[in-house]
Amino acid sequence: MKKVLSIIAVAVVATFVACGPSAEEKAKMEERAKFIQDSIAASISESMQAPEATADTTAPAVEAAAPAPAAEAHDAHGH
Image (cartoon, rainbow, N blue to C red; front, side, top):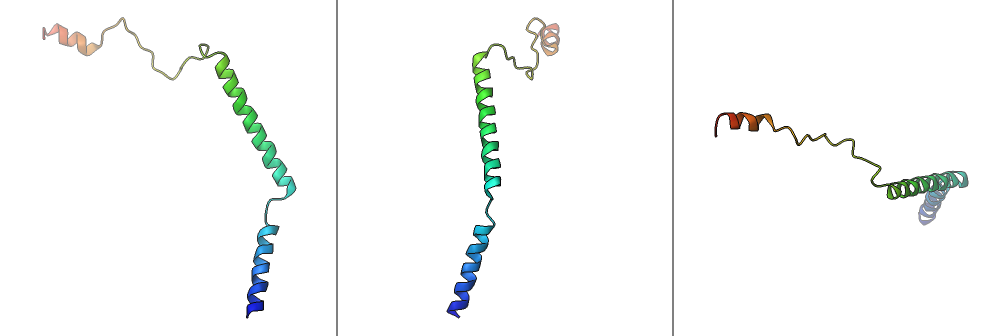
């Protein structure tokens, strides 16, 4: 019984070792990681060079000159 369990254990270990990523897959993963690192570094560098040039276009436009309609109605009723 001990020999059977040993053989099964060796087979399981061999299966896990054989199913790991190949050298080609490892190279592709490293290449992808390098590309992502370079992309992030370029983005950070670009954003640090011209912080004033980038405007927040998602923010709603604010008009300070026109009062809110609720304030006008409130003033018209004399409250």
